[in-house]
Structures are given as C-alpha cells and as structure tokens.
Length: 343
Image (cartoon, rainbow, N blue to C red):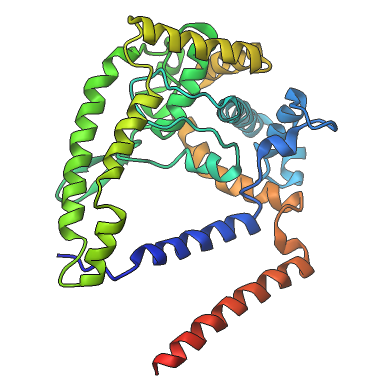
C-alpha cells in the first residue's frame, strides 16, 4: 500500500509552480492572440497566417530554406501546408471559447491559446490518444494525433459553423496513403455520449475509492488531509456537473435544441473569419496523410526556436534573468533555514 506524506499536495503545488515558472521564462505561457493582433489590439487573420508561416519552418536554418529543390522542397512545402492549417484550426478553436462540446467524447473545451496549451493538446489524457497493446508488458501505441479535448473543440466549432459533424482528419486513423484521398469518416452524434459518460463515471468512482483507501497508511495527519480536502466527495460532484455543462446531450429535446442554437448564434456573431476556418478544415482533410504524424513530434522544437528568434525567452535579457535567480535563491535560503532548525 503506498504511503502518502502529510501535505503531499503542497509538494505537488511546488512542482507545478516550478513548471509554470519554466514555461513562463521560456515564453510558452504567452497568448498567441497577443502576438498576432493588429496595432489596435484586434484580431488579425493576416498576422496569424504570417505567424504560422514562420512557426511551421522555425526549426530549419535559413540557409536550408533558401536552397531547397526537388523532393526535399516538395516535402517541406507539404509540411508547411499541413502544419499551418492544423495549427490555424487549433488556435482559432481555442480562441472561439465555446462552452459546449457537440462530440461524443471528452469533457473540457479548450479556451486558452498559449504555446503550452498548444503542445499539451498533443498529449494523451485518460487513455486518449494512447492505447495499451499488452496489459502485462504495458506497451502502448499512439492512436490519435490530438487529445480528446482539442479534437472535440475543433470538431465542435466546425459543426457549429456548418451543421456538419465531420471527424477531424487524423493521420493516426488512416491505414495507408490512399486513405487520405477518401472522404473523412463519419462520427456519431451527441446523443450517444450518455452511455460513454456513465461508463467513464463508474471508472472514476472506482478509482476515487481506490485512491481514498490507499491515501494514508498509519499516518494521522494524512488521514486528516484526506477528510479535509476530499472527504465530501466533491470531486465526483464536480465531474457530474462538468458532464452536464460541457455536453449538449440529446439535441432532439427542446432544451438540447435551445443550447445548440445558442452556441451556434454565439459563434456566428462573435467568431471572425468563419469562412477561413471552414476552408482550413476542408484543406486539412484534403492533404492529410498517415506520414504527417511525425510533424506533431517536431512542434516543441519549432516553438522553442521561434520564441528564441523573436526574443520572448527571458534568458535573452541578463538583467531579467538575474532577477529570477535572486528570487529562487531567496526561496532556497528560506528552506535551508527551516531545515537548519531541525538539525
């Protein structure tokens, strides 16, 4: 049985804060909307495409890009076309800030357009997009490009704008090169989400009980921590509320239709360049090939290089970096003084 140290939550909080500090110093918490807005602070489709043009090839030296020819030029041109359309859909879906998912999977809509959120969208959550091949050896295989939240957000925005629920073009779901030429596969409507949600809720309830049973072992302080933070089962209540809040549910009902229409009206009024989003979605469906899955793995490097070239990392400024060092050293000294009292 695992042993949970008293106030382990504080340890996790510190780890998360350190990761946030690292992301901030590297410029990855910056909103992409702030980078691509016009001089008056308004959304600019032109500037967003210019940004994506740079980002898509940020990891290639200028000398390489200027001397491209033949098959290599064709490959990089396709990489640019694929990534620009993929990232455009991701970023614009984040900026749409929709409240409800129309698709049958996932719980959370994605509403932040930072570089961190962009990279997080390629990582699995709750078994998606990773599947286990062998339970005993714990081997796994990636089976989706994007996590369920990002996939669902993009697909839902497209659905609200067009009325067509069409699966996101995923290179991991294509069996061979010819699959990219076939129509994108159809997907189930939102009315099928209830059974999936109930199954996930049962799993999470079982995990919750297991976590509660294993949280402490002979440690009174840890037991008190559990009762104070988790003892009221509020986590499960939140899960139920989240399920109700983020799914449209049965759109055949009057309430479901009303929610659907409200979301559609919001996008029709406030979402700019709707035609460009639809065009990018259809373009991505047209050009996506199974081999395009490799480009997602290269995105973190492209983001790092773009942030370096444009001076958004704090390390490019000696004075700002020294200020960070001083704050970290002061925190370290506080810990050492406390530990010294224990000696």
